[in-house]
Image (tube, rainbow, N blue to C red; front, top):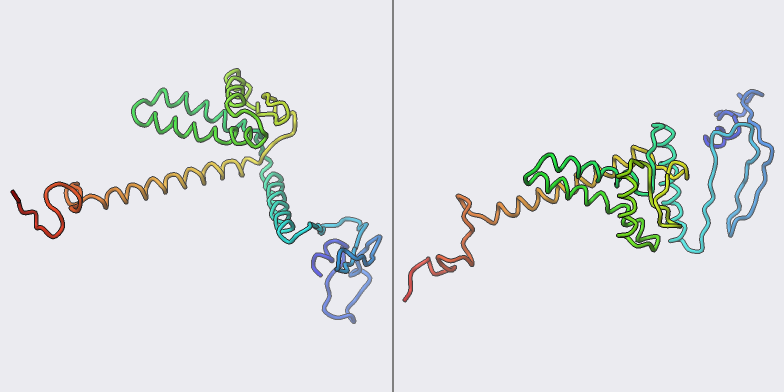
Length: 231
């Protein structure tokens, strides 16, 4: 009822005795149609609809569930783009540019931290490599071409899935909301940090007091023997 009121411009009332002309909504067409085995009422040609319905159809229930998931993702992405009004080029362009900047920064750091930063840069390039693989393109050739384009200052260059050549994603209209991109990178980094922390905890528990390895399989005594010397 609320969605119907938003679509037609009418108002929901609790009693028919309170109905006035101002409460009525408008629609150009109202009819019942049969979709599959279900009968549905269609309200169309509204003046200024603020609510719409999307019908998803598929051969099986699994297909419909996948369509619903994809539609929800698409609607949320569009909503984020409208709210923030901030976009970045797609096609792996942001990841390649980030990897380029990270490697440039790593060379100024040195030491073990440099290796960690370079590993982070390698992880960033997984996105364009996966895009190329899904499109049936050569990962190495596609990535090398993207790196070359970004080194020349083409920050919005991404992989064209049809030609495998770097092209300006902004001109093609291939964009992504900035919030989605930053959230993905942040979530991936947090997951990696969590795994490293768990690994550190397991490694520390495998050592005894003073940092020495726990007894049980190490030289200096076997379980049940009390560490006595035998000849």
